[in-house]
Length: 239
Image (cartoon, rainbow, N blue to C red; front, side):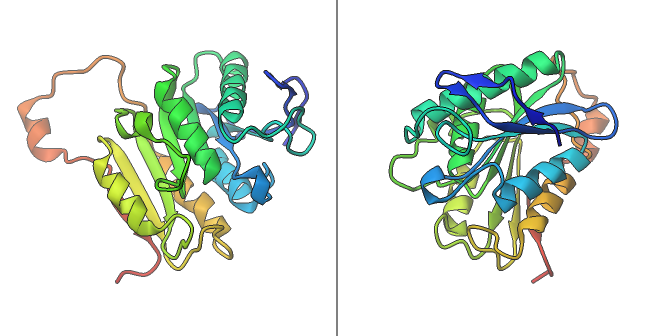
């Protein structure tokens, strides 16, 4: 887990850590942390466990502190500046891993940054959101809601800040392809369930294959026998 010392955003140096798989990575991921004004950092348990899950799925994962957090330069701006920080992190990973797909991931506030930036960046091929604040004042998911990119979500069933009902409502509006895991009894911070977030992301993405850049005309037999692999799931005992 080497520290990264050469990541810079518009406000200056951004403190960051890079986790890599044991073999060649299949994707380069930028993972954004939750709201700094409520204690969110790149060391938040869900971000740590989520990054580990993506590494087990074969990805190189960059976690970083937004401006004004930890040893990162600058001051928190409430969203717009943090999106610029995220773009700088994408630039860094694109340069470090040329030719690899770029994925955008985030938790809570960080998911709003990652999803919206990733939806409009042509280099980003996959969007990953953990407990997105769909209905909270000041958040806008316009680009996410119309993005055709593969989208993967993890949500706590007992989340009292970003309720699961909101997740289902907006999940239903999202274009395919998409997939959702709901973790039983988990609150917004996934207290006591953080490791399950990493397990869910590993399960969702370990066998994921990037869509082909050019569509291939399917055979009639394929249309009859190959249903979509993506769809909602739950984590925990069946009900």
